[in-house]
Length: 565
Image 1 (cartoon, one colour):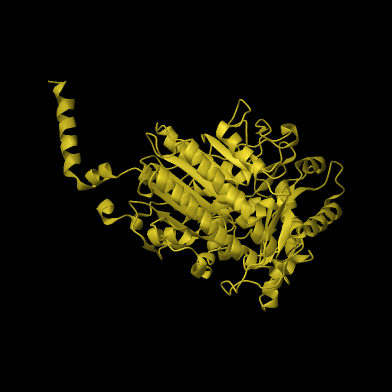
Image 2 (cartoon, one colour):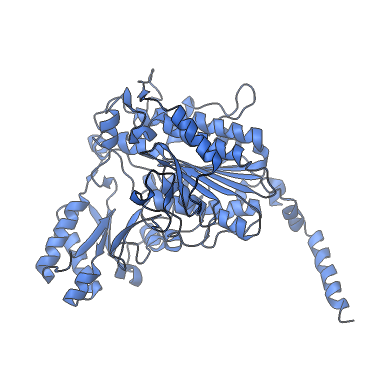
């Protein structure tokens, strides 16, 4: 009789499940064979609308998929998706997309930070134990891996669920590819600008050899390498929303090598070649090669291919998001995304694929251009502020015998040198409060500073109200965020590139988001969507657990009615 009770209970459970239409619908939810994640680096929310008339149609004459318009018209399009980051830049942006986590959980608040324990600055994907594979001299190039990323990504969770999923990520930037993949990615590829070919690291390739298909890809690159790249001046007026002169272009390494205006020319072997249209073409070449060589989407489980378009960021920094260069590059991206989608259609089927299109952050137009348009905008010299602060600390507390009071600054994160604090037998918080007051009341350039917060302010939650309080709490990472963190007024940035991004303002925080797939109801959605919603929504489609730090929601409003019932 005792043995019959579990069987009886099991029968009741099965009967209840079959009688529940929600469970029946979930059981019939068709898992995608492929998840394709497309990230455009420094993707402002206005660019799809501004350049819409120049983009490919959603479908070609022969029924082939177009690029951006195919996704926005066949998918669920959120024009104003939001990051929950205080400082929006490449590393934290890419880390957020497929972890579904805010920076305080995934551990990547900025691109580079200072590590007090080692006394060294740390690049977000730096890992001396994982030498790069494919570079001429690995010892001369920093090792990289996802080891600084905390928690799991969507790809990790698919594998943790026991699925034989394959995860491949590709970008010109190492940090973009690595942080999209997570700890269990099968391969991350990025571009060696000096050697002009694709490389990886021993984290993914412990034997120290690139896969055959990557070697073939690199051989093709060498064979087709041009002596000189030429980007001709485009004909016509374009969209009419872009700069027609180089008046507000800041001289940088890129603009010096390429020229401040069309036509652009540089050696095909030059490091700036990645900022030409060829950089986008090379990225899609690699994605198509991976798709075909590894037969992604044709196995027993959902595979994940993530591709980030880094040239968009390089051109926007150098020429500005309102430049004709950026507009013309978007047309190249449009065409190349269409080529990738058509390759997916031929090998996997778009009806078997869920596609995500988004950005890792937005960007701000040139401060000089904004000021010429009567906007309050300008530049704040971070290095100058660090020098001023160092002088103040020496005057207030005495000379630093072991290095300097400030060990490092990055994106207005200022890091104290713990050795000097020990030398002077000072409590960190007491020094920070004096430094905060100096920045607020005495420093040159203080008129451009909106808020100064310290590590103690975060612990005590004595923070600016509203959205900033929320973003600081979600972003600040002890040991990686600055001891003092400065928030500038809108449209104030550091010197350097023509255009910058690093703030919490809407132009940096908001990006487009499109999700397309067989279970998705197309349309333009005005509901609030956050980037942390991507991972749990994809996990829902793929039948896996959301990543460990996931705080977002399933975007249930985009589900077709038969799925939502």
